[in-house]
Image (tube, rainbow, N blue to C red; front, top):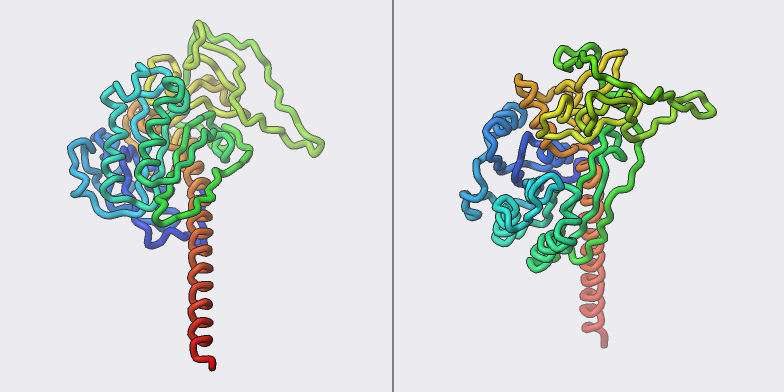
Amino acid sequence: MIEIEEADKKLKGFKFIDLFAGIGGFHYALKSFGAECVFASEIDKKASATYYLNHNMIPQGDITKIDEKDIPSHDILCGGFPCQAFSISGKQKGFEDTRGTLFFDIARIVNHHRPRIVFLENVKNLTRHDSGKTLNVVLNTLNDMNYDVHYKVLNTSKFGLPQNRERVYIVAFNKTYYSNSDFVFPVSNRTSCLNDILEKDPVDGKIIDRDDVQFYKNYTPQRNIFGEIDLPNKPIQIGKVNKGGQGERIYHPIGHSITLSAYGGGVGAKTGLYKIDGKIRKLSPRECARLQGYPETFIFPKSIPEAHKQFGNSVSINVLQYIIKEIINTVESNEQRTNARLSNGEEWFQKRKRDSFKV
């Protein structure tokens, strides 16, 4: 998580609602810029319990059963709406899948409250599902409600978090407030590696001690002319357990982790397997928290599988913060144009007033 200076907390006075809130990645990101959360919704009771421990707010339950009129007024609607319907590993039925229609719960809330900004996250496959038709429904729905919509796939690995995690981000501006949305998504190539976030001798980073471990690559990090290690900024596969598959591959800690996953029954499917200090192990919950940008004060469940699941379902906070900086730039540029128009209008009015008294 990026530390935001007080002078840069330019969302003070903005209120937001946190839909499909999970454990509060959006909450951390928006609050770091001064925004206030006035409502949260999360159907998973265990995730809600974690949310409460860290944000002192109990999320409401099933959003499909909550009347939009009972939701407080807000400036920003955010949420990583459920991705199972659009995921490559899912059924890919899109809006035919019941979970897919949860987007329309977002739409009915937006239609009623007309927030200034809508900020959403989903899996990369949303952009490809049904030849792009699913994404077009999302974009057109927001567009029809008078929003200027932008989307882009970004990889967490480019934003200082050593995790290969591609997600599509959608940012929409209410044209009533922002007549000229010159928003651009952030561009970053911050390098990092798994070694940067590892715990020393974690008690909950399960060690894999098996006879079917095979190493087929002796990876030697490259160094630049200054003798510094050139970080590859991607996962470096060096071996495997059993027959392979993503969950059974073994990676080098000078590279990045694989995408954290909420599900998977392999040996290391949720976190991947890594050769660390000569041992093959999974990542600990604290290491997973760091991979998603959560602060060291974050309280996660005592159950390791549940903690892995919650972090696998979460958003990457650092990426959200980079995007929020660009959202603020758009808000400020619109305000400057509005003030300039008002100033020009006042100048014109005063001139007409002076001219009317001329003989």
